[in-house]
Image (cartoon, rainbow, N blue to C red; front, side, top):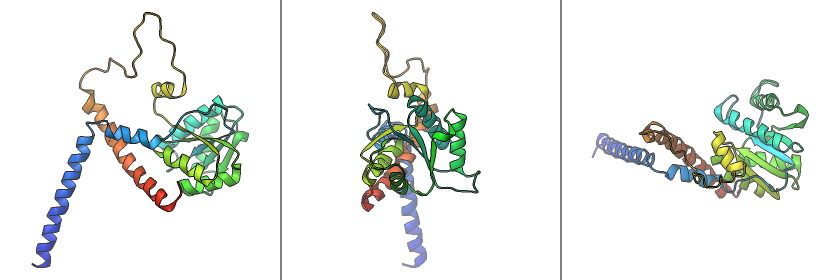
Length: 241
């Protein structure tokens, strides 16, 4: 068998495997499995019983972006909720002073009401592991930390901070809607006497929305979760979580 025949055979196998993988990915979009993966990757989340001493907003990517804006938005919200806590932005400098993404995150926090004097910058950590180590050197292990990051990133982030030496670390996801925020961060209102029982999902969504909206959301959750699972596996191999 010549090299051309072997190449054709392996090309057919590769295309068949890619086709099967694509079918599996599309099929998972009609299930809740990607969402359940995302929920698992959040780990233990929730607000602390005692106010945190520091709110650590983790950066990733570049400013502005959907991820950055969500994290800074919720960092500012929690800063208003815990006015005594200092706010730490953890992101390496990626440009000239005054024009980098970390400066953009700080400006966004100030724009949303956080006093500039409350904000500290941690600019040396280039990964979640390094950010945890540098934050420990900056804050000390006794700090009560509230981490703010994307939902799928929180299990790895919280485990990294605990592994680095912090004693008390809580995690709050940067959610994308006020409805989800109320369910996560605020106590539910008492039901009205004789009124309908509250349900966690709206009942007036209309017809045929699964393919129009939910399917595509599940595809995003799947890709983000797979990437984060690979990162989590690497961190476990290295002993960082």
